[in-house]
Length: 140
Image (tube, rainbow, N blue to C red; front, side, top):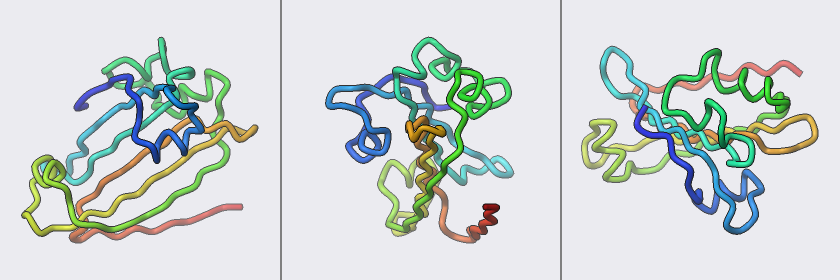
């Protein structure tokens, strides 16, 4: 866990969470390791109106995971949208993921919504692109 903080999120995240101008979100920033090597940066955003005062705003692990906690708060995620892009890594991403200057990353953005359409979580996963394979199975 790199940090847990309440912020005004970037415009794209605020839009995905349907936040009003000036509303805040709680972000949980993590570095994911594989064999002790960083392979992913995962930033999970939650509307502060949902996360403030819960374990989501606490810098420790959430027992059972964030999805379980959201469901216990009455926000069962039932709709999920994902978008995947590729781009050159930023200087900060190069540092955190230990990448060479010219390396690329995959960015997967996942938005989860409750049954009534309320956005409850946006996760941006910035992954080392080299050797990465994504596979999806959907059950409708």
